Image (spheres, rainbow, N blue to C red):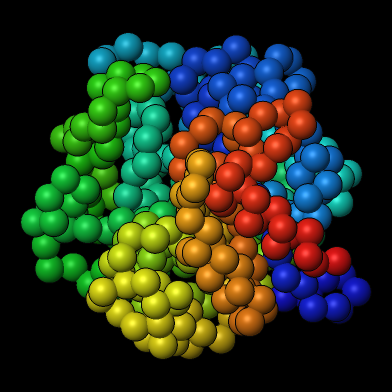
Length: 363
């Protein structure tokens, strides 16, 4: 990647969660449940993020809230996905504030749902009902801002029903083709049995997915030249579709993304997988020949928490000149968090201390 002056650019930043779930859960305003800001017109303190020498933020979004839909929840009640009527204005204000702090912004379609249903949790992929409309609208809004990048979908999982709990598609599909071209129909969508804290449930409903190529073309049809980011199968772990069914962008402004959590399974370029070697994992990420950003990375937090994995990731990103975005800049406690509070923005022990030191070590 290069910046506007043609200089090499390594994206180094954080995820700022809240816009994907606040409004859809009925919050008075979009950032109210984030732990970072609340009230009409409020946005997080992006200058504090820049103070760690980060150069980017990733903002997860909700398609129904952006589109202002009226949605139906799993218990049957209906409500506005943007109850305060200020979701789009808040996203726009957040991007403006992040840019003013010197930060690039990745806008990510995090939660989506088909039909009139409420996107209150992760679903396996973009839906033909709303996702292209979402990307057309978002691209039109930010197409004149080259500091904004579009991540088309968060963590696809095109798993067959035989896979069990998260499998919603018929068996026997060409998954690498489907993730690019869409067109297959799911048998369920995912919801929660409680709007804010319930367990995930599969709700029977037939709906059709759209693929990355369709969403990319919807963005480009607006005239937007922004960088577009696409991940892969298995919650952004398996990127083999880039080599077997590559997307096509006439502008060549596309980036591959990967999510790095220490699971011990799947592709892991640090070598911490029992399934694929580090060399195999690195090859899958490098073979498409496009820039790479780890748009989510996480590691243990707390007294005595190991920093081994997050340090391995940081060293890998520098060695490969890849980008990285840690999850998450929210003071929620528990694993995969970077700060303890929003009074001093003290880093968490473990992930937070290691990641801040890595950021501060860059100019």
